[in-house]
Image 1 (cartoon, rainbow, N blue to C red):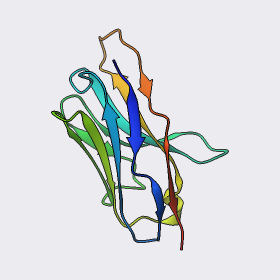
Image 2: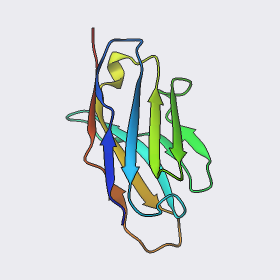
Image 3: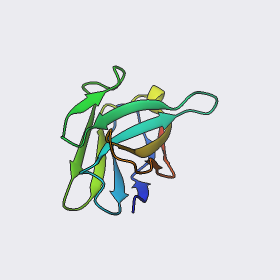
Length: 119
């Protein structure tokens, strides 16, 4: 229950696109808020986008209008569509499952996938 496995990272030129996937085990979406975070060496991990158990989305200001978070409930996959990528988006991207308030269950993190934006 709760394993997260990211994929889809890679090297892309500025202005390009990537789609990250996070395969989940178990029925996480019902009682977890799912999110993508990113981290650059030497800096704190930052929230990129979140989708609540009820389906509400929110984004960091730096990615609004360029990134889209979504989920396939039946396939149990979380996505992050990233368009118009810029060098400042270079980071390791992590999938995260945070339990909805009131549920005494663990928080989960994936192993991370590297995204590099460079010409």
